[in-house]
Image (cartoon, rainbow, N blue to C red; front, top):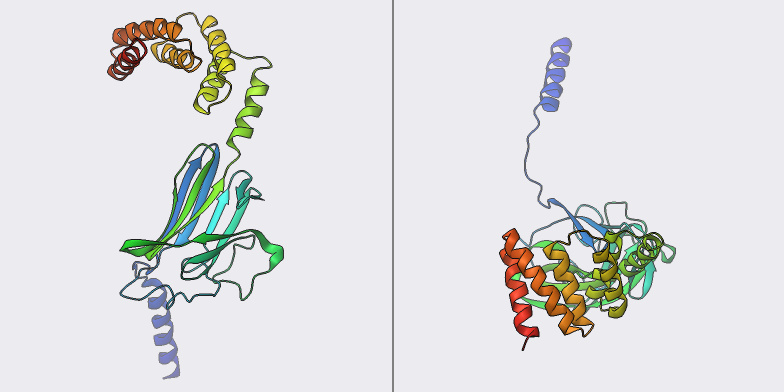
Length: 280
């Protein structure tokens, strides 16, 4: 009898191990990968649902440290040093901890990103940055907890935290200009036509010294045997920005002819619109 019970017990254990049921997680994992300027930003978090519950001030109490999600601490990773609230946050991974209130949240970038729950109290030696963020009401229910990366420019973006009828934005800056300027300085020590072109285009797009951009685009074109319509288009825009409208018109006509020859309708349209504006 004893032997029979042992056999039945072993069979039961074996069956339990082999019978693996797949079912959806109540708070599914999510991962965002976003390029901001030249910086890679990755956010990993879990997404609990409202399921008819009152969230802030109830499920997520006011005035208490929250892991900002479910299952584990929400984690953000920056490939470069960034700035948050005017403070430098070194490249690496951080927990996004929050202390929600009705009208403002305290948002903490915390070096200890491991662990399932929020810490009992904040260890100040692990705080990389701390900012106060305003709460904005949303007109509809956000059923699933959501983190986004929005308002992206070449030098900044916003981490958006949304759930229920609440949106909390946290701005951060990336070192795009410093990286690009360093690469321009390095490249121009022995520049190619492409280096001069890229430097000129960046100066135009970022509103820097347009006279220098004009100098560089001219050097690029002089080193290019047969400039393409899109290169000529960029040169015409730089000339116009520098106040040389006559030169811009002359170059735009060349770009128009080349874009018509290439069958590129977008550049044909853009050149015609610019010519109409500049020839008024």
